[in-house]
Amino acid sequence: MSYKEKIIVLRFSAMGDVAMVASVLKEFSEQNTTAEIIMVSREAFKPFFNSIPNLVFHAIQPKTIHKGIGGLYKLYQELSKYKPNAIADLHDNLRSRAISTFFRLNGTKIKRINKGRAEKKDLTRTVNKNFKPLRQTVERYADVFRELGFQINLSHKLVSAPQEIPDKAKSLFNNIKKKVGISPFAQHIYKIYPLDKMEQVIAALSNLGFQLFIFGGGKSEQETAEIWSANNENTHNLIGSYNLTEELSIISNLDLMLSMDSSGMHMASLVGIPVISVWGPTHPYAGFLGYGQLESDCIQIDDPARPNSIYGNKPCLCGVESCMALIEPEIIIKKIKEKLHG
Image 1 (tube, rainbow, N blue to C red):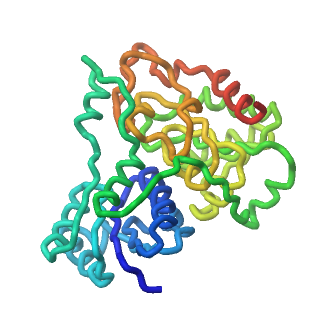
Image 2 (image 1 turned 60 degrees about the vertical axis):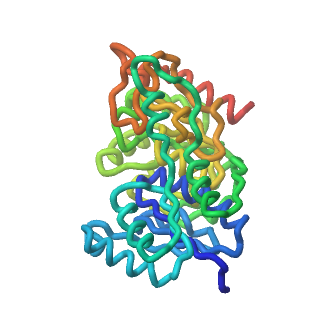
Image 3 (image 1 turned 120 degrees about the horizontal axis):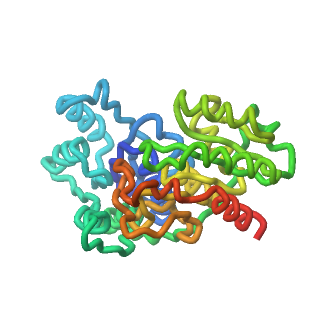
């Protein structure tokens, strides 16, 4: 099929942000069938875009062939072969700006995300905090396409579409128990609910008869999840056993996800699964709530010091105990029971 427009979309990281881009591009694709999308991101994130029909994925390899200004020029040369009409820079970092500049010099139309940095600074400052909801990140992404002249209306609705369960996981779905995914880890330690309290949540949910699936993390997180799964019935550690495509397929067959303000929330959103999310120094008002998720499903404490961080890379300022530690396991357990049983 030949397309009227070809748009190169730049968003290289982080994992949750790229998953949010995929949610937006799914709707963009449905509403703009004459446009072809060339998605430029890290190879690891390709599975997020597998279900989008008019999309080509082009991997950036920033540590090898696309390293430095010479490597970025090589990437520009690769992307030039698509003969794009426009560049949608959804990242606005040094790499994306360099690539955009190369394209601008040959006359290609460029639009860049407005990250709202000043508003976010006002939201997180300690004195005279301007505490109000900011524009959602997914709408900021969509704004870039609107500025390029495309129509896109985001539904902000979850669309459930269960995928084929991987063969090696099918035995875990041979019962009628409610299935809850748990994504207890995050890139920044300040966004992680205390692990001893999470262990209490897992034990209680296991005792209530739910089937639990633990996602996300590296080797140390895998070891923690192994202990949890060994100590609790119907609790399965999936870390290190499944690739991203398989994880998305499994998540799409869950009833609910429990997550931090992290990529687990955005992966669940991408496959239409509701999320109970736990927030610490960050806040849904900053615009990073999962696509289609409800603010009423966010668990957080009210404190004048919150939020004090946009990305969760700063410690909580709520006092002796962090705002995460002030959330009791019973609050999370009650919320999950209400969500699943009404």
